Image 1: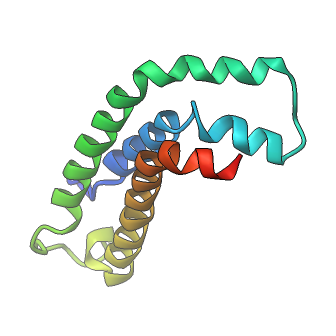
Image 2: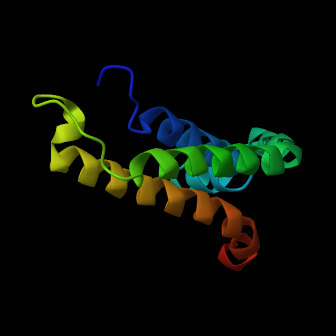
Amino acid sequence: MSGQSNGHKALAAGGVAAILASACCLGPLALVSLGFSGAWLGNFKAFEPFRPLFLSVAFVALFFAWRRIYRPAVVCKPGEACAAPQVRSAYKVIFWGVAALVGGSIVFPYVLPLLY
């Protein structure tokens, strides 16, 4: 890809930030549903103050990924990854998957009381 990024680093950063943003709430629920238990699950609540920071990082990363993925198609040399339409389609699908993960991280703490 010779110096041009298609946004995969921004997508990865957005995904990691979304997972960290939901670690305070989704982490214990996932572990309990897998059969783990114990008082140590309450330690996940320590991530709660950092949730706005993680969500902000996720939004910034998604913005940069959106700019790279949905920009006008540049002229690519034959054989480069950006020349294949399947690659662009795959990045778009992954982008919207990560965006759904970030959206779930936003609404999950408000839906969580309905699940317990």
